[in-house]
Length: 141
Image (cartoon, rainbow, N blue to C red; front, side, top):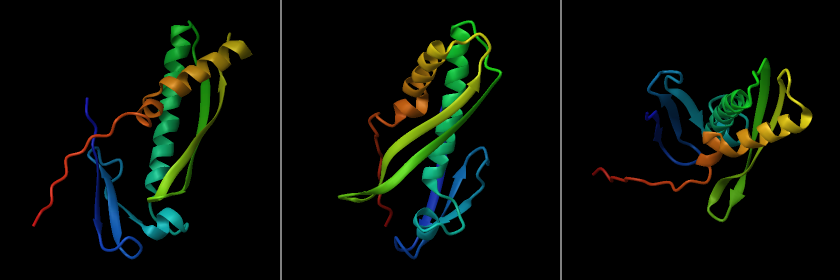
């Protein structure tokens, strides 16, 4: 399965504007700007989408791991913080922190910590943050 997100941008780094979309139209051309990403202005923040996706992926991974341990998640709430900063090349993601709480009948604290660590390590988003990123680039004249 392949899922696709797209973005369009026009203009300079600080003064330009763009949109973020998904082929499922979950995001139907949501606007973003430098100010929305870095100054708290109205509009989308691409890194916030990473955080939300990572939280959802973690929850699903925890449910999967729980099932593999013959346990069923009653509820799980996860928040993911994506720390944004700069490096030698400009804006950068400098860290990711997961905060989760769950109700899993029959789970001990030790078992929960093991399952949560497994979800942190094996969630597709966690793995994606360290994979090789390939690219096809075309300059249109």
